[in-house]
Image (cartoon, rainbow, N blue to C red):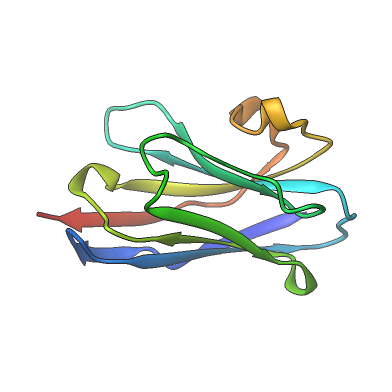
Length: 125
Protein backbone atom coordinates (compact mmCIF):
# COMPACT_ATOMS: atom_id res chain seq x y z
CA UNK A 1 0.00 0.00 0.00
CA UNK A 2 1.16 3.51 -0.79
CA UNK A 3 -0.37 6.76 0.37
CA UNK A 4 -0.59 10.03 -1.51
CA UNK A 5 -1.52 13.08 0.53
CA UNK A 6 -2.51 16.40 -0.96
CA UNK A 7 -4.37 19.60 -0.23
CA UNK A 8 -2.01 21.57 1.96
CA UNK A 9 -1.31 25.23 1.47
CA UNK A 10 -1.36 28.70 2.93
CA UNK A 11 -4.54 29.99 4.50
CA UNK A 12 -5.47 32.85 6.78
CA UNK A 13 -6.65 32.25 10.31
CA UNK A 14 -10.31 31.36 10.31
CA UNK A 15 -10.09 29.81 6.90
CA UNK A 16 -10.55 26.25 5.71
CA UNK A 17 -8.62 23.57 3.91
CA UNK A 18 -9.36 20.01 2.90
CA UNK A 19 -6.63 17.40 2.87
CA UNK A 20 -6.98 14.12 1.07
CA UNK A 21 -5.10 10.85 1.35
CA UNK A 22 -5.47 8.21 -1.31
CA UNK A 23 -4.34 4.65 -0.72
CA UNK A 24 -3.15 2.67 -3.71
CA UNK A 25 -2.23 -0.94 -4.01
CA UNK A 26 -3.99 -3.89 -2.53
CA UNK A 27 -6.17 -3.01 0.44
CA UNK A 28 -8.58 -5.06 2.50
CA UNK A 29 -11.70 -3.88 4.21
CA UNK A 30 -10.59 -3.48 7.80
CA UNK A 31 -8.13 -0.66 7.89
CA UNK A 32 -7.81 2.64 9.68
CA UNK A 33 -6.55 5.86 8.18
CA UNK A 34 -5.14 8.42 10.53
CA UNK A 35 -3.94 11.99 10.32
CA UNK A 36 -0.99 13.24 12.33
CA UNK A 37 0.88 16.52 12.26
CA UNK A 38 4.27 17.82 13.20
CA UNK A 39 4.97 21.46 13.83
CA UNK A 40 8.51 22.86 13.72
CA UNK A 41 10.42 21.88 16.82
CA UNK A 42 7.61 19.69 18.12
CA UNK A 43 6.87 16.00 18.17
CA UNK A 44 4.42 14.41 15.81
CA UNK A 45 0.92 14.40 17.26
CA UNK A 46 -2.34 12.70 16.53
CA UNK A 47 -5.04 14.72 14.79
CA UNK A 48 -7.85 12.40 13.68
CA UNK A 49 -8.54 8.91 12.45
CA UNK A 50 -11.30 6.92 10.78
CA UNK A 51 -11.97 3.26 10.23
CA UNK A 52 -12.91 2.15 6.74
CA UNK A 53 -15.37 -0.41 8.08
CA UNK A 54 -17.94 1.08 10.43
CA UNK A 55 -16.65 4.61 10.13
CA UNK A 56 -15.55 4.99 13.75
CA UNK A 57 -13.70 8.25 14.23
CA UNK A 58 -11.47 9.81 16.84
CA UNK A 59 -10.19 13.35 17.21
CA UNK A 60 -7.59 15.15 19.23
CA UNK A 61 -9.16 17.56 21.68
CA UNK A 62 -7.37 20.46 20.01
CA UNK A 63 -9.25 19.96 16.74
CA UNK A 64 -12.57 18.56 17.92
CA UNK A 65 -15.42 20.61 16.54
CA UNK A 66 -13.22 22.24 13.88
CA UNK A 67 -11.89 19.29 11.91
CA UNK A 68 -13.85 16.47 10.34
CA UNK A 69 -12.42 13.23 9.03
CA UNK A 70 -14.42 11.25 6.50
CA UNK A 71 -13.80 8.60 3.89
CA UNK A 72 -14.77 7.57 0.42
CA UNK A 73 -14.42 3.81 0.48
CA UNK A 74 -14.83 3.28 -3.24
CA UNK A 75 -11.72 5.37 -3.78
CA UNK A 76 -9.83 4.20 -0.69
CA UNK A 77 -9.46 7.84 0.18
CA UNK A 78 -9.71 9.65 3.47
CA UNK A 79 -10.20 13.37 3.89
CA UNK A 80 -9.54 15.86 6.63
CA UNK A 81 -11.79 18.89 6.45
CA UNK A 82 -10.22 21.67 8.50
CA UNK A 83 -12.30 24.70 9.45
CA UNK A 84 -11.69 27.68 11.70
CA UNK A 85 -7.98 27.20 11.26
CA UNK A 86 -5.62 28.76 13.77
CA UNK A 87 -1.94 29.67 13.48
CA UNK A 88 -1.19 26.84 15.90
CA UNK A 89 -2.53 24.39 13.31
CA UNK A 90 0.50 25.16 11.17
CA UNK A 91 2.37 21.90 10.62
CA UNK A 92 3.23 19.20 8.17
CA UNK A 93 0.26 16.87 8.07
CA UNK A 94 0.79 13.16 7.51
CA UNK A 95 -1.71 10.48 6.69
CA UNK A 96 -1.14 6.96 7.87
CA UNK A 97 -2.60 3.54 7.20
CA UNK A 98 -2.87 0.43 9.31
CA UNK A 99 -4.71 -2.86 9.63
CA UNK A 100 -6.25 -4.25 12.78
CA UNK A 101 -5.99 -1.10 14.85
CA UNK A 102 -8.28 -1.29 17.84
CA UNK A 103 -10.24 1.79 18.78
CA UNK A 104 -8.09 2.59 21.78
CA UNK A 105 -4.97 2.55 19.61
CA UNK A 106 -6.16 4.86 16.84
CA UNK A 107 -4.20 7.74 18.38
CA UNK A 108 -0.91 5.84 18.49
CA UNK A 109 1.47 6.51 15.63
CA UNK A 110 3.21 3.17 16.16
CA UNK A 111 -0.04 1.37 15.32
CA UNK A 112 0.17 2.51 11.71
CA UNK A 113 2.18 0.62 9.12
CA UNK A 114 2.32 2.95 6.15
CA UNK A 115 2.85 6.72 6.05
CA UNK A 116 2.30 9.31 3.36
CA UNK A 117 4.85 11.94 2.42
CA UNK A 118 3.29 14.82 4.34
CA UNK A 119 1.67 18.01 3.18
CA UNK A 120 2.39 21.44 4.65
CA UNK A 121 -0.39 23.53 6.11
CA UNK A 122 0.47 27.11 7.00
CA UNK A 123 -2.04 29.30 8.80
CA UNK A 124 -1.21 32.98 8.90
CA UNK A 125 -2.49 35.29 11.60
